[in-house]
Length: 184
Image 1: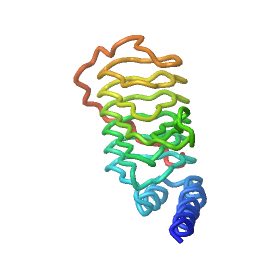
Image 2: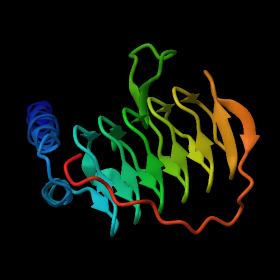
Image 3: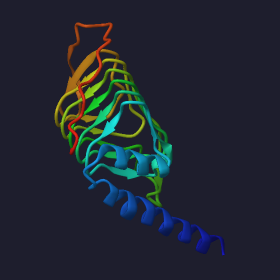
């Protein structure tokens, strides 16, 4: 009986996330998308924007700070805690995961680990952030990078796997991100 109840919960969650929230992501209004995302449990700070076609796994575990922009087609994994800070710019098609299979276990079970992204971080297009990673305040992740380890504050990382390739000179950022386009 427990197995049947667990399966029903899984199907309902898939319906919510994979169907309803997925289709809301195609609606061309930030305000309406934000309203439905909050209904689904996503915590979204004041002035933050999520562009069209974003995908979410378990939105109730995802917290986005204020004045943050999430680009088109981003994948945000909430199967464990995902905390995104204030004034963060996440470009298009970025994937942030906090669940993966244990490739060395006999049953190939899933392992979940939280992901944290600090304030004033920029993550370039098509970057991938893997489970358990902490990205420090002001860090920059280059386009297409695969981040497998923590990124120090103000570091600039790139490559596969991501390695430090530089450092931001501004150590006390206070900027606000620009206004998002209305129909993106």
